Length: 162
Length: 445
Image (cartoon, helix red, strand yellow):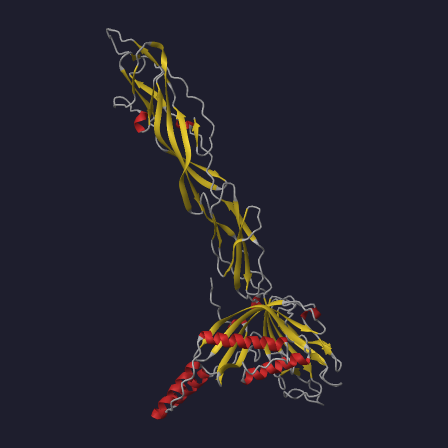
């Protein structure tokens, strides 16, 4: 782990030493909070579908990189074990968006259950998760390239409504 | 130069802080990773499960036990658990054998299999005891005497951080926040989430929302039902006398653990009963003092002079202030004549002030004329509830009879006055007081 302040200082030093030879990078496309929420909701739809109906969903429209590999593997593992993760009565909201880092956190509160051939009528459990994701533009669309379910001590506060 | 080197070394150390001793490389850092834990050849999917279910029905690792190979193979599965998973916080199971698998069967394991349930935080490590490929993490080796490692589950979720909050928030207490003669308002104070577990394993998912609504009387119809993230005020208007409104509140955390329904009921403010005003009775006084003289003005007045009076009373837990303001008086002079005054002048003024209430008797009456007066009071009430004052509201009119005077009147006679003489002035007792009357009505005392 590197102290961010030190890292920032090192970057400044490097830039200063490099003088005027820096190369102008192409300005990254911007994604508004509303657009980011749409991307996250669509990705969450696919993620849920991949876990509910393992092996039957194309994920590449909304996922890429390590996130795609991981979700594909998880879906295949569920399929291998003839299990599926079902979800119902969910409420979802974007609780964090950083347009520069292109990092988003979607909070999903839902009832879930794991259904297997041995336990087809498993009971529902109330669950809450905060799904962190890094978005990246691939071609003409934005996809989730890295993701993680945040532990509660890293949860972002949900906005107070009404 | 040495100072520069020391400064550079210090900066380098500050930039690379050391790892916490008890920290975990996988999942939450509250506990260290278990001894013999080997993550080689595992995808190391670390899951965070936040649920209200102490048996963790959504544990993603509960169905991942397979007999992969004929013996010797990955056939003995072990778990290492930290936290409050079997009744006490800060617990650690050590490596526990969960099950033995036979190739190629499929097995399940979850907390309930061991009679366990999670409260607060628990951390689950799942591994197979690798007899075949020990040494992959540099501990143990096939053919060696030293113990082989516990290999993290290769395809499942070998590390699962489990957070269980199965307890509802603290109970909200609804109460009346305001009341008038036609409406009543309710609210409640915000409450926190009670959380689950204890000590380092305590976990509270946090407040979710409140569900609240009103009912009227015995009806079960939900009025003004809403879900809000903070307390609100519900007001029932246009209430009729005797009608009761009830507020119902449930607090839920983010995992929908719900408190029992809490209820508070109240009606609109009702007028208090009319107080007994008989103590306000004045007495009739005359000048000249008895006997009066035929054909001459007799001045009469009330003593003491009626004044506004407030009494406090409590009814149904509400404090009322009831005020009686004298507004006029009616006089009967005992000879058939009457006078009515609709202002304070009707109370008369004691001699030698000039009283507006005078009477001239035309005939002698040795027994005495019965001089009567009745004071009219306008009565109003004010209620103080929950820090708010409501009123004044009219309660009605009270008529308080004054203590009458028997006033003999004599024919004026020429008389030689030898010394000062004071005549007796007979007085009769006050009339008995009236009972309390209904609001808005006239009560007589």
